[in-house]
Length: 242
Image 1 (cartoon, rainbow, N blue to C red):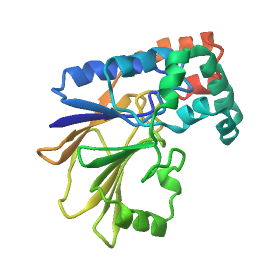
Image 2: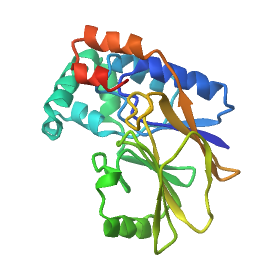
Image 3: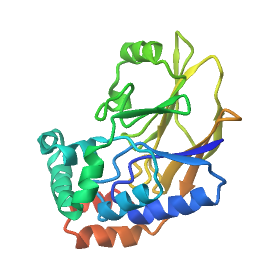
């Protein structure tokens, strides 16, 4: 089985469409989304509609959490807060209700899916977790694989019971999982990569081969930049796309 895992679309419909085209051309059996479909980008409503149209299982990200409960807006920096406040005006009540119903984590295909950090954190960044805490969580984690987003940065952490190994993921088939290790996989971002490469990113998990492939997908960045500015969203979120 080949499972496409996407995250952090952030209202970037153009990038999402190109990723969906790539997924459709890649003999994918299923898609899972790790949240933050909204925020920063100009077309959050259209992104949500595409996710729902395809019945893609999805967890709640920290941006959805703020849409669901505005008290969480205080967590964000001023530009991100302004973007989310604008985002709320662009969403239908139906999409807001969908967002409120999202779970903080999912366990499917015998693996865990969460936006930030296992077991169910929406706002913990993987790079912020101390080494000892990381090892403790690995030992508590019942699943062998956990897929996360949130940092917008591709990364793989393997744990053999004693030592954790951190690997920066690159384009292509980059890893065959070891059956005796546990892993946390950060799948990068579809809508706003922050790893020095401006392509949309997602991963394909081949369950039968127990391997991981990282996909880079180009899209029309200039068109999205124009939409962000036309929507009155903060310029910093347009500049980041480059």
